[in-house]
Image 1: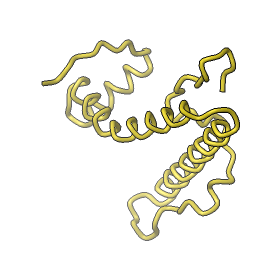
Image 2: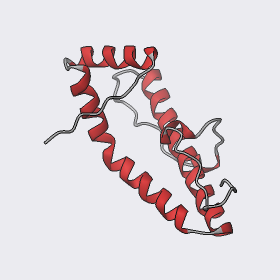
Image 3: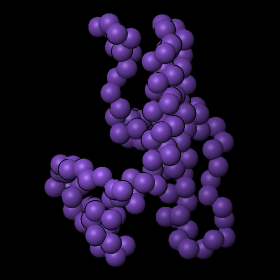
Image 4: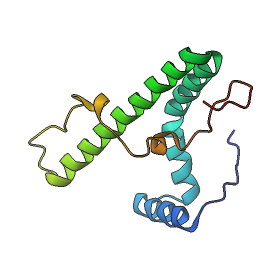
Length: 129
């Protein structure tokens, strides 16, 4: 059984979803359900990582969250390289997308693009992590 959820969307998001749904030959609802369904395993892994972070204290938590931040930066760097590779060489298939290499040392402006800006974790006090 499927459950319905009402989700307010900005005009820009609504237009993007509408366009992608049209291109894929689906309704907006079917497109969103499929997209969110495909991402659900990643959402669960991210949630588990945040739960682990919430269970840690002080420096352990800081170190864990920094590791998560570095992993996110590395992932976004790899995704950007793959996108650039495919933009530079459309449909050639002659070369493989770039690999992670030293992606962990790269800087990214706003890594919360991937996590959708999950809320800041707190340790039950007024101190935000």
